[in-house]
Image 1 (spheres, one colour):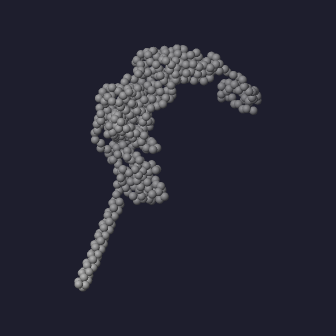
Image 2: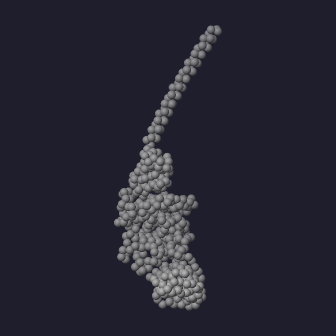
Image 3: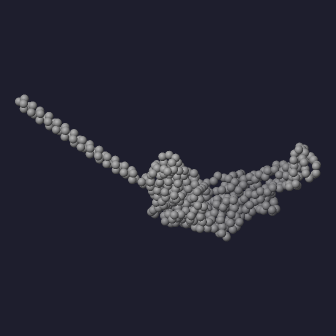
Length: 573
């Protein structure tokens, strides 16, 4: 029995040892297989890393190493507004074709148009160590979108976002009387139904810069989204063109280049053109649930004969900017083409304003439309004319008709005070102010001046204390000359009053003065002074008296200087 038990235990021990050895061999075999497999995967990952030359377009920052040859493909040129390239150490950057993209000294990459180019980074510490990035900007391929709601039938409250440049933006009251289209549109929409938003447009913005700048188009999109969440409809007015004509080197310090070509870049591509950006605005506004309205740019006061010139109408088909190799193209035509493709509402402000501006110019009244010494920006009267053009066109086509109202007629004065200072009694000094008329078809302007001051419609005409001006549909404006004629050595203070038979005058967008009941008042100040010969004696040499020495009082010397400006050489002894 004991022998049988020992034999059984021996068999069991042998079996256990066999199992342990077999399992150990199996585990080792499996382990070897896993390690080998892991090694293969590691090699594959390494190979993929070495071969991965196309960078992820979603990233905002890329690190390049000396010897790298990478590729970056962008399908939306706005994405690269925040792309940054870096190397291991300080580097200098160059770009093969600056029309495709630009790069600054900090490695910030800004795409400009469709096509391919190469960006090279060179380590400052060793100029032999370089990295290359092939940048490819793909052409846009957008489908046709449609308005999310109908501006012919909508009746609920809306926000109207005004997007544009210095022609569109708000202006504080100033002596220049500058006034934006957005400000004017507030006069033409019923504020109980339409909130006209004018705090996003700003001067110097091209269709490119406004799109990329965070506080511009991205802010409009954020506000549209907020309206969506609140159940409110949004309309977007888009008007660009003036600053798209900037030179290639004109750049915003944060957001890069301003320029665009109209429809085709210098290399024949479409991406990054005015057409491209306008189409992006239309499509993106609709994607967010807003209705876009395109407004071609207001003309510049540049003329060919009696009409606004092609350049004034932003047609650069035969004009290049410094640094361009080809003409920029026709900007209004580009916007029209984008709107036509997308079926968007369009107001041809360019052609319509060209007619109105030419009428002003041919009547010698252009200065009532544009800011002084500036044939680009509008005064209050010009802004109101533009607002009327936009709303008349919308009404004519049945858009927002229940939201648009008639703008009240206005008689506007561009000065709230006139300070003449101190002048000699019985001498005279003349200055002027302007009166302009918007939509007031008939009436009488009456202007009165206090003692010591006279009024005239000509600086060389007769001056009276009362002046009347008849207004009708052809009256644009006039300059009123004010003469100060003190007869005594006293202060002269008072007010010029301006009234109209049916409208209370206002100050336009110049600093406001007093409007008392129906009378506008321009504050006057001045003083008469006497010619004094008092002063301290001192001695001078006067070469006109050979060897002579004479004593004069200071006012007498001033008189001699006036009489003999080329001959009197004075030296204090």
